[in-house]
Length: 311
Length: 311
Image (cartoon, rainbow over all chains, first blue to last red; front, side, top):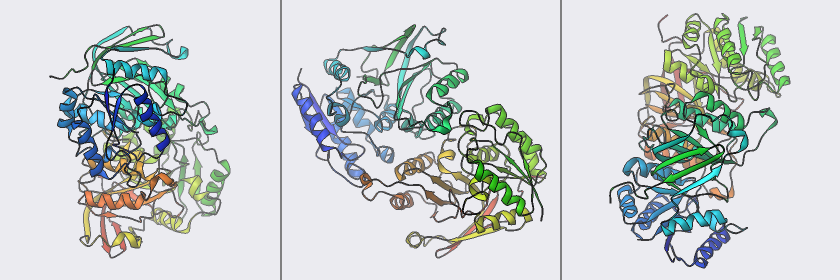
């Protein structure tokens, strides 16, 4: 089905224009109408235009009437403008059927929008790194994106790494929990601000890239000490990539971080979610109610409603 | 004057033992009695012993009766154990005259102690990187350390970089403000937890190392959005070192971060404080009342009381 996809740049400037063009062509080849925001390739310092330019781009994406508003890339820029984003206009656009999709720095936008309006957005691909990947767009990512476009695909499933499933005997299933989260570093950077979602009894998913396990642990500890982790029904860890181990670690790595965390909080800590800075990523409805069930190493996550807020 | 200096390891494992030994010898050469904690060279993963070992080391430092309890090094480890540190015992040791000195990861200890007890500690050197520096210990650092040992040295002064002084016409002087802060990344990692000091109308000093300016800005924005920066009488930026610029920055650097921050908050943002991950560092009383005055590019900071909490 042909859909209208609006591409804009709320964060860092697009530097890899070849990947960007490949991504646009890929979406066109899939039969879609791709509309580029007028500032999608703007640059100011490391940003895709100055703050006013990127705020205007967000407003144009909300006014586009597109089926999907897709970010060109993540990077950095949204935390600078969280006090000026037109949240109500974005929430209205979502009510009218525009799905906002992105990841990484976009976690700031998604979390703030959730905190301010309850509107649901999608943790998912970006145009350049995903649809424009040099090796070609990932099949699973594209299938999930297609499900979103078609109004299908009401859930996802994955297999936890063998080493992570043994100590989860008590976990069976979770109902009626709000799914939220995204990039750990970006989400943590919202703590104590008006844009951190106040969600209890939710399912918090987290991923990160290029963060040493000691920094991942420090961020998880901050969320834990702030009471956030203990209040959730489950913590779901996605992909933590780009980790450079050093000799100083002496066995301290993500496995040690996960094992320790499980001993410190009551909610189950599931792992292996296929989401993060990796080609194979599912799309996840941030702010939607989900059910989660585990059968040994197999985890299933189901969402019933695309728009839990009033129409 | 011969003083009793107790050296312990609350954070990362000491890996550069040559620097550690040089540091000990330097303090001995200055005439001091150096006592090494039994676990000062312990190792567990990347830590100086497991959590229980480092907690016991802190308790021994508090019970040592030393004139100064000095960390071997920073790194990572204190945020893991903030819920178990014997704060009252440390505060009592400080009341009895033991000065706790350190930096970097130690900011977590200093901030939590300030939040829990109001006790004053010193942002200052570590044994390995400072007293054991291969090029020899820095003269100014040693003079400041000597002032602390002698009960002298009730202030410090520095010259702001020329580019940073022009836009500070309104700033004259600040009185009766609590000095607090330290490492920006470590301090920010305490936001929303019980260990973040609730200090209004203070003087907040910040430094960091190996953090790109975009990450520095994101952390400053978090503090700003949390209301912390606007509540202070002044923000004092120390040394931000180890920054690797990349072509993607296109003019975005620390100067842009400082200029933008000055446009967003009311308190003056002073720069150039000789403190951070640099050899030439002053010692600063975290939790003490200070006065700050500026005369053009020259800044003076004076602290009147070493122990503002009751004896």
